[in-house]
Length: 113
Length: 113
Image (cartoon, rainbow over all chains, first blue to last red; front, top):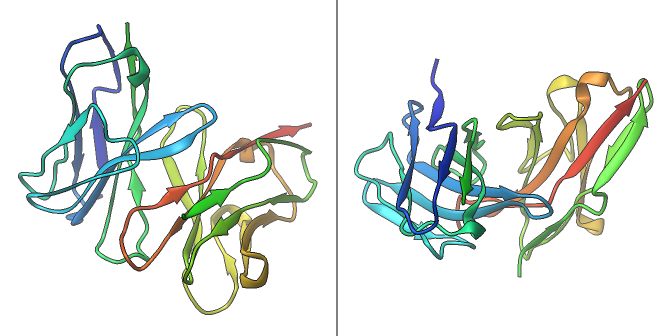
């Protein structure tokens, strides 16, 4: 069955370190998204991609970057981790239509000390 | 600006009672509307979606939602709640100009015996 996976599931890091969160989908979807989930804020869009070599900034993109070198993967990099980036991160993917369902990964819980 | 509002942060219902979770949106055109559910420690799962046609849509797990354009609402309902329905519920809106979703802040549902 097609799926979307995230790794690691839990991560503890220190401020100032670079961190990369992996997202891999086997749906063959063109669209991929990264969200962060914080209490009282719901899910907020960080970055998204509509295809290979396409990346776009979302609502809360400062301090984050993504690159899309193939269809299956959209890694999220925190260039210099900050305590404000402690959060739960979700990756999602969807097919190329606004009506299509976004399928979510299980999430990565990141703690920045 | 686009916005999605879920007025109720927490809702408590008794098992077997009916449920209605509210969602209001602010969009210029006809939006694409989604309800997702998140069980503790899990990713998000689609319950149902609306993009055209019959304004009453049926979803999984016995949920339904009704699109009311005049009220800019897409409320989620269930006639009889089960203890396993305890979770976080998110309303989300998309539109023709892109594939990213705008999420509400969520409603946490507690089911009492």
